[in-house]
Amino acid sequence: MCDIQYDDRHYGKPDELNELLDYLGLSDKVRFWGTNDNGDEIKDEKSNAGRPWQVIVSKEYFSPHIISVGIEKVCINSPSLVVTDPTIIVATSPPTSYAEDTKGSSHAKGRIPWLVAIETTGGKVVINGGSKTFSDASIYG
Image (cartoon, rainbow, N blue to C red; front, side):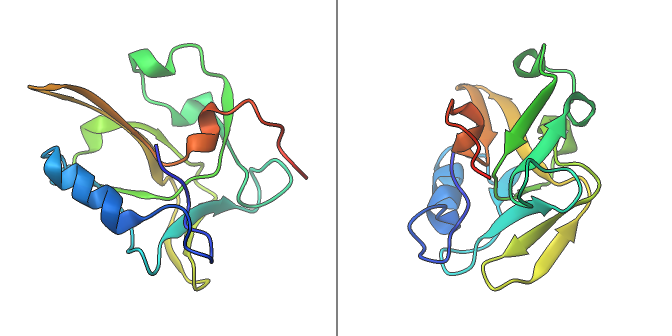
């Protein structure tokens, strides 16, 4: 799990997360977009819980997978994943979403991957763009 990169650069370090993916031998399939100086965040003006960065993802944006069984809807606050192997995608954002970097530029639109699952010879790895997906904290706003 990771987090989006806020302007203060305290969270969501894409360079460091991608180094971990390199170490695990997975960077040929998935990477976090951006750098430690300019990460991103998935936003949606239509499908949200009160704020564009509180993106609502309903079950139609999940692929059949053991980790998505029974999910009806989640609220994500996530960076985007750059996926070169579409078979590992478990969930995307809605088609009305876009990814915006810390400088305010949009670089991706549509169904943006934020959750993937990979089986390797060493085990199973799940990469989730936003740690808040698993939080029981109230959504503010």
